[in-house]
Length: 98
Image 1 (cartoon, helix red, strand yellow):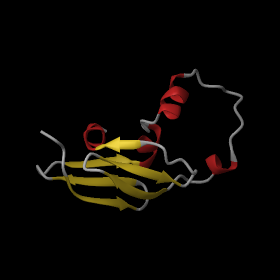
Image 2 (tube, helix red, strand yellow):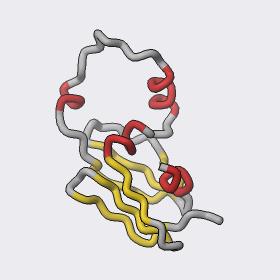
Image 3 (tube, helix red, strand yellow):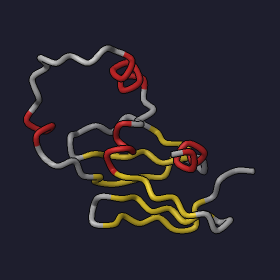
Image 4 (cartoon, one colour):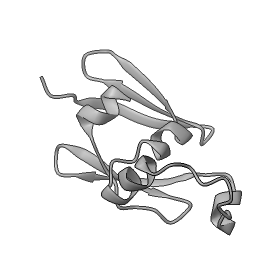
């Protein structure tokens, strides 16, 4: 069965709420969604050991916001973030998993 969203909305720019056609409701925090970005560069970055001396970029010091979600075909969404990142395509199945 393919996951089909019926309604998607953002609560207080903190939680993405997805009501699925089967009645299930997903509530995904913005930070979890951003940290779970499936793009190659984010996956590579997440596999590296954390660097305790890494200097934060100015955009990383501001609260993260989801700017927009554009549908990609009938299988997912491309999300644009306030930190400028927009290369991850979140499949419907992956959004349902999160």
